Length: 134
Image (cartoon, rainbow, N blue to C red; front, side, top):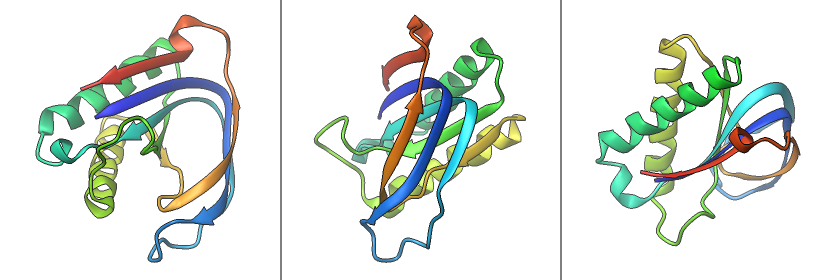
């Protein structure tokens, strides 16, 4: 798994192109003061509970550093060449979402199965952009 974390003063999206036929209709949204995880799920991550746990722990750590409880999970299959099957990747992101909520965080997902127009405003700070590979 590869994850590019951003802390954003503002992060929003507008669905622009559906990439999965069975993706549900999606609406634009925007949020303030949030950690955003751009998540690239690789085939080996599906059976690797440690990668999922590391994603949750890193998201919580960064949210605490920025004193926010909002974490946005964004599927981003552009951080590597190998990518997991779409339904399995979505299931992993759903589990991470649930684990964050169980821990008292507010988790939001960008529309899965879409390319989205993104709005991103992030401060120039070393903890505003962190890359992790699990």
